[in-house]
Amino acid sequence: VDAYGNVVSIHAAAVGSVCGFQVDHIFPWCRGGLTQPDNLMALHWYANQHIKSDHILNANKDNLVERMHVGLSKEQLLAFIQMRSSHKR
Image (cartoon, rainbow, N blue to C red; front, side, top):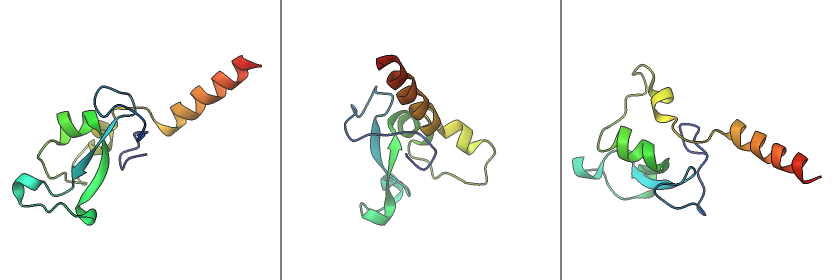
């Protein structure tokens, strides 16, 4: 799960998948951010490309979590797994 509640998976296609992610610079590379572990995070690909992009996110900004939550939530994934399990019986 990324910092905004999107389920991400290393097994998903990086772009176009409901669980795809990209490694994102928290402080953007184009603004001098370094490519080192403490400045990197896994972020849902759509949130990274279409919402965050090269911006520095302000945690105090209204609706940040809602805007960044674009994928599958943990609760949705668990409900899907439970539904599939009950149909296999």
